[in-house]
Length: 212
Length: 212
Image (tube, rainbow over all chains, first blue to last red; front, side, top):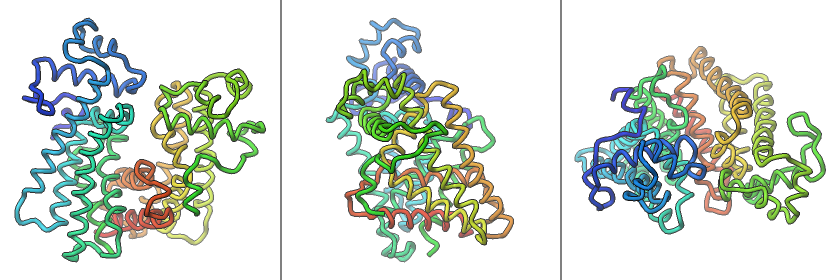
């Protein structure tokens, strides 16, 4: 992963977002919204800010969305489209022990987070700003990841890779702490390479779970 | 620690906050502000919300503060008054190896965070909403903690308790991930006792750093 690619919310253009076909400028609209929400915080950001970031009139933006909240919701769903896909890919791998599968998940999710720092910041800072129904949808999708990691830790306890003395739910939360926290401090142009941060996170989680 | 004490921002009344003598209702005002900021997010919260939480008129609140930002600033300084004091207490302990001192710090800081979930939520969610000068003051005080933990990891590498292959700055960030993250998921009335969460965090950090 080039350090450069982690400095922006821009990713490749999706064919669809949450099952809705993407319109040509959707990619740019969502990237601009991510940048603006990360800069001001969602509550203080306005649709006008997003339009200015895009260099278009506010009225034109309403072709893409009805409300500011639509932008936040679509952004967070997009984060899940991509991170749900990486979970699925890891879960489908053959021949891995539960601990090895967990390591692959930590590697894939931490890499994704470091490549999408702006969107991840918005995801964790602003999910509670969604209306109740939409918030429940996002948190429901997050729970799939929590359940996956908790189940892998439980399986690793069965195979003897992880001590049975540990509480799997509590350990899963510590694993997510290590995966997620880099968005708070990692600077793509700093001294540390993204790949090295990812491998350090994989090791920290592995040893945190296994030395007993 | 009783689980009950973690459910509220209320703590014992301080004699002073950041060197300024506390007025009689300061404690209640800051607790109400913490509750309101945690509920709505700082940007969406208003001084009117805080007055309502206190059951007083908005005008009366201006005896204590000039602006909404004063409340946020004093709250975050208060978090540092208390967590800087616990750092100092740990640093002054005699006869500990660097790793043992780090374990004591993780224990003390995680305990503090779990007892002050509401204020810690506001601290991490809203510090960027401060004006530049005030934000710099808070982040400067946070850096003392980062430097302390990074130095302890470096010393533990000298004594052989932690592998020299690890990057101390990167490891310090993983340690803070584990210390801080519980504010995102821990529920005081849930199945897990605060003391057990604290000890699990101490162990996770210890093993994360030491099995190589």
